[in-house]
Image 1 (cartoon, rainbow, N blue to C red):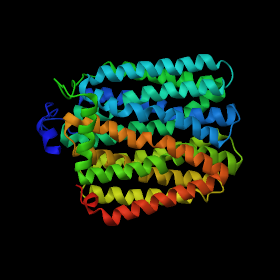
Image 2 (cartoon, helix red, strand yellow; image 1 turned 135 degrees about the horizontal axis):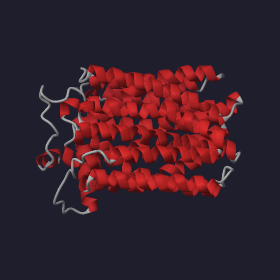
Image 3 (cartoon, rainbow, N blue to C red; image 1 turned 120 degrees about the horizontal axis):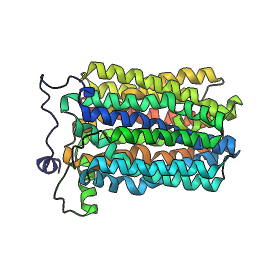
Image 4 (cartoon, rainbow, N blue to C red; image 1 turned 120 degrees about the vertical axis):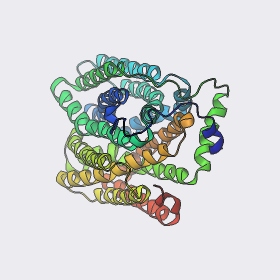
Length: 422
């Protein structure tokens, strides 16, 4: 199946990667506009999960179970939309699809801010807002992921992925912190207005991007057939299949701890506001940024698969240790170290998948990628929320990290194909 799909690829590689071309991804104008859009988009989208949790825990004075439920609701549309969105990413002009999704997100954020008024709104408003934001995010996710290899020649792919990760980590450093500040200054609705302004700014940057055009043309297969092609490609490629398995571990057991349970841990174990978790996310983002800069400067480093696995072993160990923290400073240190490991995971996992996937099926593969990485997170958040209420947030974090470490170690010693990926 992989050979069949590759042979039908109709989109030429952008640029020839010769010495006469750009030496880094920022030298490509279309990618530069796309990257600027990503900075503001990631800053808003990464802050959104934090703000929802903050409103539920502090504004509405609900427990960890409700916080986990809201995050579950935010990610629920992904389960139904990401795979079709991957097909749309291959068939529809990516610029138009991305613009439409971000305009819709702007409406959701501004509408939520208006309806919240001067307070925290109601639980019903937060639920509806989370559902709508989840729908919009699911539609725009695969096309954003597939645009990186579409805009760049192959020799600049890892540079582009690292720069994209920097855009995301800049948002982790500043997104939650600034959203929390605007919330302190102007109320919870101020946080939503701030995110709406960010999305609007990103739309302006995106207008300057030259579209690479749809990845496929003259597509006549049904939606089900198109989705099956993407899934079959992933299944038939053993190394890529293993990368998706590791991505599933992260999405189900690791990401919920980073972006959900940490907030509850800061409030329940340290006796502080859930908003005080923002510096932890900021330092985590800083760590990812450091790793991303290293990868960007090293370019196509050797032993990518081996380095990727070692970073994941380190990251799962750190999550287990987070459960034993008794002070905020300890969590800050572990958060930064987790970011260093997370930077390798984000860059290498996506880079290795995209480097070994033909552009004609990239949108569908990225739809599946987003489904595994994002779609599993709501279930993990829901489960960890109830586990934390039944035991403690620290116990939930330690169990999640310990189980992740065991699964990653088993994969490391049994899946030789992943360690040999270049």
